[in-house]
Image 1: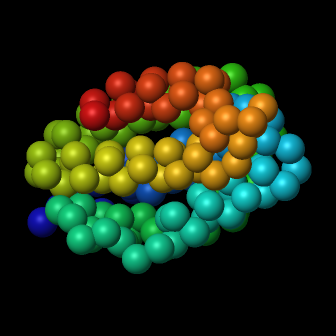
Image 2: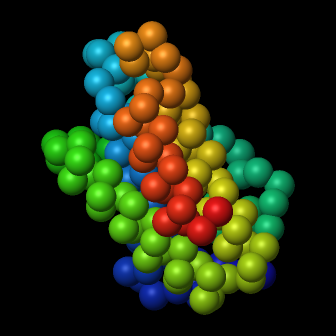
Length: 150
């Protein structure tokens, strides 16, 4: 079983922060209004803090879930949406490669799927222009899924 100690400190920090980075990028992909944005960030926080799913990456997810999500959200909120989207996609690609190298295939896939599921939950939380998942969110979800290798 892979644990956070199988990664360097910098790698682990990036792995643990990835769901927040991707979630904030999705929340900022399209303007949901003040209430919609609040709901998306609340969904992000709750999705990360929920009990880890029963899957191969449970121990990694539990360890990642201990980060201060609100602090990380604040860190990313001031960035432009297009820049944040590109940073999130690049991080997905980098971290996917690290997970594929260091974790078992099942653990790697399960962690990446968990990150993507959080991203989808954020995108699906609030309507933008009358649709649940906007074209901008759909495009970013596609880029994220590809970068994660899912």
